[in-house]
Length: 436
Image (tube, rainbow, N blue to C red; front, side, top):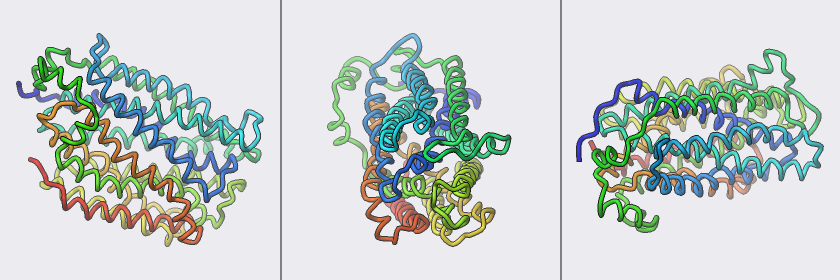
C-alpha cells in the first residue's frame, strides 16, 4: 500500500467546496424550522418533537449512503453520484417547505405537510453531506487530514453565514417579514429559493472539479483488493461496530453531550432571544419575526466565530486539548444567553458558541479517521459514526418537552441546560487517546 500523495490547497478546497452549498441549505433549516412550525401553529411544549425527524433521517440515510458508496464504482465517481442525487432532491424540497402555510390548508394539515417536507429535506441533505466526509477519508493522507477537515469546517461555516443572513437581508431590501397568521413571510420563502439555487451550483462545481480515484488507484493507496475487498463487501454493520476502535466510542460519548446541546439551541433559541430581548414569544407578532431575523444574524456571527476559530485550531500542538477547551468555551456562551437583554450584546455568547461548533465539526472526524486507518470500510464507518450525531438529537428531542416543563416553560432556561451538556462533553474529551 502506497502513501497517499500530498494534495495542493486547491485540490483540498475542491474536495469540500460543494459543502458550502449544502451547508446553506442546512443553515436555513436549522435557523428557521422552529420559526416555521411556530408560525404554522405548533405548541412550544411539543416543538422538540419536530426536531426528531432530521437526526432520524440522518441515522437511517448516512450509514446506507456510506455502505452503498463503498461498493459503487461509476465513471462519475464513487461518492459523487450520491452527492448529486441528494442535492437535486434537496433543491426540490427547499422550494416546497416554506410554502406549507400558503396552500390554503388547515393548521393541522399544514403541520403534517411541513413534517413530511422536513423529512424529505433532511434525508436529501444527509445524502448530499456524507460524501464530502468520505472523499477526505478516501483521498487525503493522515498528515493533511486536520487541514482538510479545517477547510471543510471553514466552507461549512461560510455557507452557514449566508444561509443564516438571508431572511435578515431580504427583509432589509424590502421583502415582507410579516404575513397573515399561519403563513410564512416572504423573507423566509425567498431565502429557501435562493439557497436552493446556490446549492445546486456548488454541487455542479464539485462534480466537475473533483476526479475520484478508479478502483486500481484506490486499492493502491488504501490497501483494498482481492480477499480484502470481498470481506469489505460482506461485512455487516454489527460486526463493524463490534470491531470498531475504542476511539470511535470515546469520541461518540463526547458527541452525545455536544449534539444534545445544539439540538436544544436550534429548537428553542429563536424563542429564547425573543423572550430575553423583545419580551415576547408570540409568533404572530412583528416583534417575534424581528427576533427570528436577528437570531439568523446571531447564527451568522456564530459561524464567523467558527470560521476564525477553525483557522486557529490546527495551530494547537494538542488536538485533544484544543477540542476540550473549545467545547468549554462554547458552554460559557450557552450559559450567558438568558442573562443578556440587549440584542447587540447577545453577539458575545454566540461568538463563544462558535468556538465549540468549530471544534465539533473538525475534531471528531480527525480522531476517528486516524483511528480507522487499516480497518477498511471507511464510508460505512463514517456513516455509522453519524449515529453519534443523530442518536443524541433524537433522545434530546424526545425528552425536550419534559425538560422544558421542568425548567418552568422558559425557552431561555433551556440554553443553560445546553451549556451544562456541552460542558460535560468537554470533560469527556479526557478519555480520548490521541493518535499522532
